Structure formats: structure tokens, C-alpha cells
Image 1: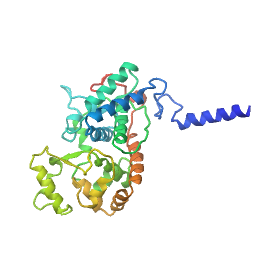
Image 2 (image 1 turned 120 degrees about the vertical axis):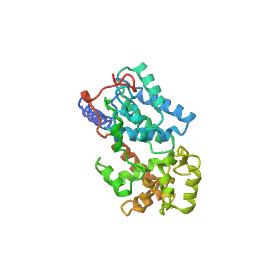
Image 3 (image 1 turned 90 degrees about the vertical axis):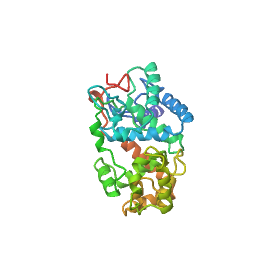
Image 4 (image 1 turned 135 degrees about the vertical axis):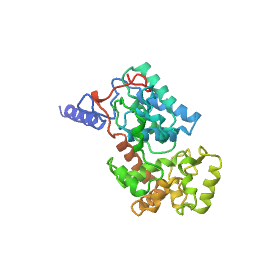
Length: 316
């Protein structure tokens, strides 16, 4: 009897720790364990295969997740295509550099074949971004699942995306409005350890006078990049496809690509955080994964407030 009671308590603790919720629509770590148990390996293998072919997609997937969550919450709205009656988020100037839509379609197609109408596009984005981080050498973490897909995607909503010209005070303010601390904001900015920026996003720093917060040699590097035009690309740090702390070390050298990057080192409320992450990669990884989980819960739609799209590019 004692052993039976102990086993019952153990199973209950596992039930709770595993992320189950006592409700039909609540988010949980194991939301799909009964109705689509192979969702995780399918997402993982499909994303890994795509990243092996094109490692630059890692940055794109993380960017897609952020841009999705920031507008109307994490609801897959960034995936919806423009129609004759509506211009969607993805066609906003701030989203034209977002890539990876075909990969999301590929994952969705495999999941629809196995468990139709079960896994949301919003969850696929969140899981794909998580896989991109770990595949690139970043932290390994899990996220709650169970988000529903939204039905609204309008270009005008993207005005709320943070601009690359924001200073640290403005960034602290806009992130604070969504419940993030300054530390959360700096940690999430560390996603710029992956990927590149286009000249159009930083060329204003090169105007006369040149932004004095930049290292003079680095400003010449950016100027050379921009000779290739507005779409010319500059890596955020020296390891564009590796998730590490080199981004923060670049800020210490006054070699942040965007004004919104370098400002994190210049502001007294965020400089110490930058220094800590530059010196302690494990601290950055821990704070980043916690901030990513927090972001993945922004204004999620549950139950009848959303749907599970059959096609990620259009509402049902």
C-alpha cells in the first residue's frame, strides 16, 4: 500500500512537472503528447535539415518568432499572405527581410499528414525558433505549447515594431509596456549574435557627422558595406551563424551594427548587463532562454479566440 501511494504521488508530480494543465485549452509543455505525439521530432528534424542546407535560416527563424509575437501576440499572424482586401504584416517594410516561410510550410505539411487540424502555425514558429537557437550552439530549452492561430494580419500594426534607431531608454520603455525588464530586453537583443543587418537599417549612422558612439575603424567597415547599396549585408558579429556572446563583446569594442545595438553599452541602465553577458556566456544563455519563454507567451490566443489553420498562409 505504501509503495502504491508513493507511486501515485510520484506520477502526480510527474504529471504536473511535465507541464500538463487541468483544462482543455491551457498551454503546457506536453500539450500535444496525446493528439500529436511526434510533433517535436518532426519539427526538430525538419528544421535541422533546413539549417544544414542554409545555416543563415537560424537568424531568420528567431527573427520571425520575435516579429510574430510583438504584433498581436504569438499567433502566427506574420505567416498570413496579403489578399486583395488586406495587406498583411509580412509585406511591411519592417518584415521584408523575414525569411523561412517555406520551412514553416514544410513542417506544417508533415504535421497535417500525421495529425490534421491539431498543431497550430503559431506553435510551429515558436518551436522552430527554439530549434534554431539550440542548433546554432545556443541554450537548449522547452516552451509551452497550445497557442492558437490568429485571424488578423494588417500592415499598419507593424508600426509597433521596435526601430533600429531607438535608444536604450526607448527600448526599455517599449519592452516594459509588454512586461519585460531591461535585463529581458538586453538578453533578447542578444539574438543579434545570429545573422546580419542590411545597410538601410544603419546607414543613417554614417551621415555627417558620423555616429560618435562607433569605433572609427568600424564605421569605415560599415561604410564599405553600404557601397553595395541598401540591401548590402553586415554581420552583427564575427560568428554570424553561431549563437554565442560575441555580440556583446562587439558592443564593448563600439562595434555594434545598429544604433539600437550600441546604445545598450552606452546607457548606464544596460551597460552592466552587456558587460556581464560579454564575460559570462552561461549567464547570457540562461537569461536568454527565460526571456524567450516569456516572449513566447505574449498575448497568446487559446480556445475559441483563435484557430488551428490548415494552411499557415490563410485563415480557415
